[in-house]
Image (cartoon, rainbow, N blue to C red):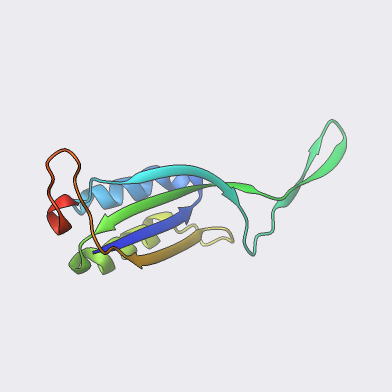
Length: 112
C-alpha cells in the first residue's frame, strides 16, 4: 500500500477529485495549506501599499492506494492538476505499513 500526498492549486481540487473518483478511488483527505516552492510568493497592492505574500494558498490531498493502482492514480493527479504554470504542485509517495478500518476492524488493503 502507498500513501500519495499531493500539493495542488486550490481551483484544481474538483478536477483531481473527479479524476480519482472515475478510477474508483473514493477515499481522499483534503487539507487547506499554505506554502511556497520555486514560486516564492508574490507581491500585492493593498490601499496603495505593496506587500509580499510569502505563503500561497494550496490544497494538500492524501490518498491511500493499493500498489497496483499507484501509477494510475499519480497519472490522474498529474493530468488533472496540471496548468503548465509555475506552482502546479508536487506529489510525494510513501509506503504504508498498515491500515485499519476502525468501524469494522478490517486491516491491510481491505481497509482502504
